[in-house]
Amino acid sequence: MQTNFSLAQLADPHVAESEKILRKCVHCGFCTATCPTYVTLGNELDSPRGRIYLIKDMLENGRPADKEIVTHIDRCLSCLACMTTCPSGVNYMHLVDHARAHIEETYKRPLLDRLTRAMLAFVLPYPARFRAALKLAKLGKPFIGLFEKLPALRPLGAMLKLAPASIPAASPMASPGGVYAGKGAKKGRVAILTGCAQSVLDPAINETTIALLTRLGVEVVVPQGETCCGALVHHMGREEAALASAKQNVDAWTRAIDQGGLDAIVITASGCGTTIKDYGFMLRLDPAYADKAARVSTLARDITEYLSGLDLPEPVRKPGTVVAYHSACSMQHGQKITRQPKELLAKAGFVVREPREGHLCCGSAGTYNILQPEISAKLRDRKVKNIEATGAEIVATGNIGCITQIASAAKLPVVHTIKLLDWAYGGPKPEGVSEAESVAAE
Ligand code: SF4
Ligand code: SF4
Image (cartoon, rainbow, N blue to C red; front, side, top):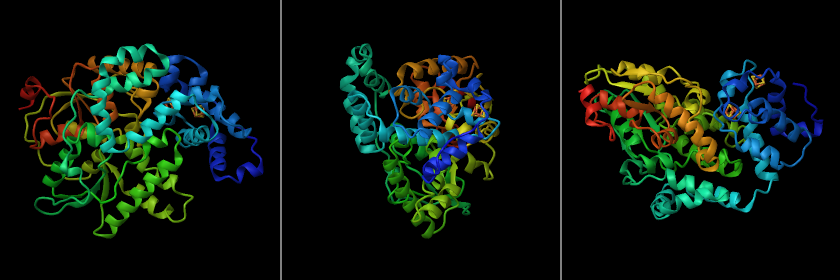
């Protein structure tokens, strides 16, 4: 695509990067076919190509964001299906990240929207605040119907709907400074990201990961100073907050590397993995962090990527339970991890089925199911229909956002992939898996 940026504009490294991306787009439109918002809404401006034109126009003219561009960029899930489809290698992720930061800097949202976003950014990345908010949410549940009737308050209704009825106790394993020695001959040493929302909604995911890794001989450390990966605020265009989180994590993991080496930084939420693997890019312009961040990104591994590199024993459970594997967008499009989770499940004795339209987002997408509840619900229902059509007994996926989203509408249990793997290799039956499903595998 031809661009018309001035030399002065290109002196800004963010603009220069976006210009490089824009020039790669040949307007072929292949990406529209796999874009969930285009498939749902049928509007070119809600397709990747349409958004690319809108962003180009805004950046080239150096003008503040307006209502039109904000509407269509807000509707983008950042699912990155367009990047998987694009034959020209257009890095839509970096382009839309730049657009979101520009929107945040130049556009004044309506008051309720501003308050909702500020509240999400204040609460979600901090486990103690999130836990307190979930407790409060119980009081608001009776008013969901009322909130849903008022367009400006729909995000609040969506948030209350997603809040679980009970909140698990905080995990002692999430405490910073923990070191969990591997059993038997040492196979490796890794740091684990404790994360934010996941550690509150389902602390058993990391507990299970630590249990399985240590049984396999891997030492797991929970470095002091870790924080939220920054993805939630990054996707809201809050660059300063996202970079502050990234730096804090880079410092924590650099200390862990210096104090005993790390084979990997293991991540159990693929949404976080996509962002941490991008730290090298996000901090490239910061001379104090560029190299350290690039090293951290190189060490970042989804738990299924890391497990794929280990020698696994024979599963101890009878094979045969049918599992629908839902590949989170951040897993398949963000990190291009498509093979490993399915292979691990199959090797562990599960019969893996893939739902139709596996490339389409479930509508979770960070805070999307709160900020865009109508589109999100349509995508969720479509996803659940495809999953249930597989005839599977359990759904496995590797991202807490997808687990919460799909579980809010599916009749079958939705669990993190690591829990099924741990179960197959001698761990307990995952909570939520019924006796019938359990019997099939015992
Ligand atoms: S598929 Fe790639 S090159 Fe084609 S319109 Fe979409 S982003 Fe541009
Ligand atoms: S990231 Fe997803 S929703 Fe956004 S333009 Fe690309 S395919 Fe569409």
